[in-house]
Every structure is written in C-alpha cells, then in structure tokens.
Amino acid sequence: MELVPLSAGLNPPYGMVNFIELHLTAQVENIFAQVEHKLVYKILKKIEMKISSHIVPIRFTINGKDVEVEVEAGETALYTIRERLGFKGTKEGCGIGECGACTLMVDGKAVNACLMLGAQLDGRDILTVEGLELPTGLNPIQEAFLDHHAVQCGFCTPGILMSTHALFNENPNPSRKDIVEEISGNLCRCTGYEHIVSAIEDAVNRLSKEKT
Ligand code: FES
Ligand code: FES
Image (cartoon, rainbow, N blue to C red; front, side, top):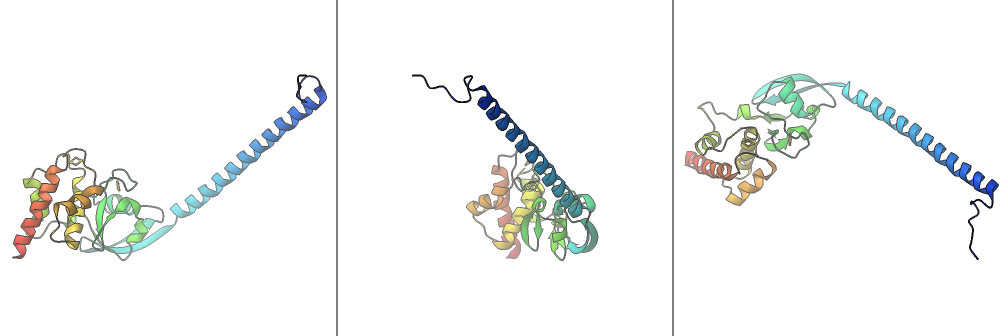
C-alpha cells in the first residue's frame, strides 16, 4: 500500500496548519534576524563614530625633528605621516600589510605604516625615506640603486630602501639569501627583483668599504 504523507491532500486541515506554522516561523525568524542585524549595525556604527571622532594629541620624532600633531584615534600611521605631515615618500599600496610600499622605520625596525595606528607613533623615533639621505649626499643604498638601475616606476622603491636600511641595522653583512628574505615583503611589479638584489649586495660592499 502506498503511504500518503499527513500534510498531503487527504488531510487538508492538518496540512494547512502545518504550512501556516512553518511559513509563520520562517517569517518571524526573518524579522528577528533583520532586527538583530540592524541592532548590530547600529552598535558598530556608534563604536566607529566614537573611535573616529576621538582626537589624540601625540608627539614624536620624525627624521630627527620633533613634531606635535593631533590625530583621530582610528587613523593609520600611514595617514598621519603622508597626509597630515606630508611625507609623501611613504607610499600607500594595498593598505593591508601585503605590499610593503608603506615601510618605514619605527625605533630602528621596519614597520608597515598601514598596519599601525597614528596614535601609536607617540613617543617613537620615526625614519622615512626622506630622512635616509646623508648630509654629504645620497645614502650608499640609494646610490647603489641608481647605479644598478634598480628603479623603474619607483613606487616600491622607498619601501625597499627602508627594508634594506633596517636589514643593515641588524646585519651589516647580509648574504644574498638574507637580502632576498628581507625584501620578500616588498612587492615590485616592474624590475623582476634581480637589479634590486644586486644593488643591495653592492650597497653592502660600499658600506663595508666606508667603514675600513
Ligand atoms: S600599503 Fe602598507 S603594506 Fe601595502
Ligand atoms: S619599480 Fe615599479 S613597482 Fe618596483
């Protein structure tokens, strides 16, 4: 004998009740979900407004000079340095810590400025590419980049120069492998990296000759 489901035509009242019950439950769940989403959205918006409207006065050193500036609590160090202070050598690429274009030095270490808050600059010692030049002229790293044609469009260059400077701070005599590892976080779409690595190897030699 063929089994007939309860909600099918043989039992109209039960099937109808079942249908209405299910339909209403889905509708009610939908309404709750929408209310919940709106509430969560409103709360997040309020938090975001509170964070971004909070002004923080900070003071730090950049390229050897003391600066005082007011920043919004939610802005990045990249925004503070490029847009508020005008150090345009620090580039904005991906904005999410992937390309290295925004690399600068914070207390002697290479940092992606897009991943740091402006407020965190307070009390720090910052070096951007504008501060790399020596009183006597170009830094040997910059000279080596020029001589080896390691620059094409130049968008990645400030970040790579800063990563190289950070590498030399930690290891004045890096191997080719060390160099490749260090700049692996800096993306370059133009050069194919060969000229960049050769320039950095040459900069190692130039700097070691200067010391002797
Ligand atoms: S802009 Fe900071 S890593 Fe790309
Ligand atoms: S020189 Fe163009 S991205 Fe590196």
